[in-house]
Length: 241
Image (cartoon, rainbow, N blue to C red):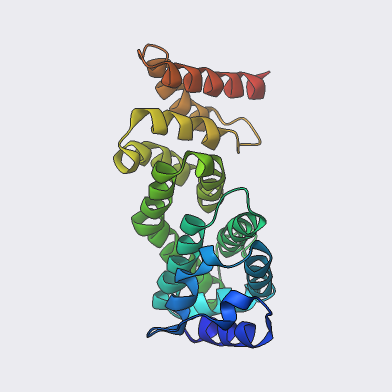
């Protein structure tokens, strides 16, 4: 991806991080850089991510032009989310970048009306391609982070929600897919509790999905599952109050 190559090249020329000065480039510059992010200082990674944030609209245009660049760009972002520690500011900045990208791509430029112009139709197709990529690939990768790191679960659930908050049916499909990808009931119920916390308003159809799982979870012999089920029910009750 030429954008990342140029961005990293310029960053290497301007940053003063001593590790970057010793960075060994083996083959591809971009891959070598992202492979080494956990060895860089938190401040250095924050600086790099903030530089990328400045180009948000330009990045979306690049992703719009080719699906391959979409896959490559998010592959590197997932590498960052996997490698960085959740308490570091750089992890939070990377998370917010991913969230902002997902939400900006799925903004409705037609104003909830039937798209009429070629531009609107093309953007709608881009949204469909991006959401298909999320459901078929990104969701699985996000779930692998949830499985691997309990301290990142809440953050990654927020990221997943940002991908589908615009579409009720997609949100329901995501919740129903969690068991397939997480393959551990305790982690699934923990994800439910984090996921529903992102909802800002009551929706009966949406909350019924969580209610179904929570009522089953209350009868589970595992304490963590019962606790997460109670948290879900508490969230639902708060919204209905």
